[in-house]
Image (cartoon, rainbow, N blue to C red):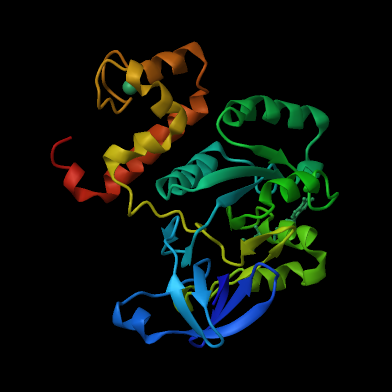
Length: 292
Ligand SMILES: Nc1nc2c(ncn2[C@@H]2O[C@H](COP(=O)(O)OP(=O)(O)OP(=O)(O)O)[C@@H](O)[C@H]2O)c(=O)[nH]1
Ligand SMILES: [Zn+2]
């Protein structure tokens, strides 16, 4: 009996890799099907010569992308082309937090900004650095790639970020062995494969990354209005100071969050994004329309 991790699924056969990096092609025992358990890429399993025999408990379990035991999301933002957007950043963070996964913020294409532009952006982003690791990089100049290597070591990573942000380029810069042109990686990143739920873990520095555009579609269907305030972890940490226990930080008197926004300790972009996301979720959840 051996233990390993599922890194690939093709035609009902799973590729499992053990601690020594040896790969095995296996099928699952019938018990999984009988119990209606679907094994996923990322799963930790026991196996014998030809079959997967046991599934270990999952740390987390995503449906889109179809993957288990993700350690962290590398949220890729371009500082330019396309322009950096606080709203997009906060939308992605909200979705990632709602899945209880760690967020690493990657700010890429820094080669496209002047020193002044970059230091202005860094000043604002310093607020986020209190809550999330923020790494500035450029796939073009290979600037600071070692910081990405360090933070992804021995982890299962998923990429996220808007189209054109520079995700494939980071993949390429981190894993030149892959030697795939960016647009081909784009294909490998799952374009058109959503329906077949293809996911594969590939080597990324000294860790793994899923070759899927995780969280690329910013859908808030699964969020509830009441929970958004928990996904803004900076708000959550201060919320015990709000006058009302279940303060939504929007219209209640004695709201600590609004106080901090006025004082400038919470940047106003962050608060505006919260309102924006709140209103968006409210609009897609008809049941909230009646009472408000
Ligand atoms: N100057 C500069 N250009 C970059 C950098 N990284 C990526 N690009 C360019 O930005 C464009 C988009 O990069 P991709 O890596 O394909 O972006 P992506 O996030 O994978 O995009 P999708 O596949 O559409 O999701 C390409 O033309 C890249 O050459 C960078 O660090 N500096
Ligand atoms: Zn409040």
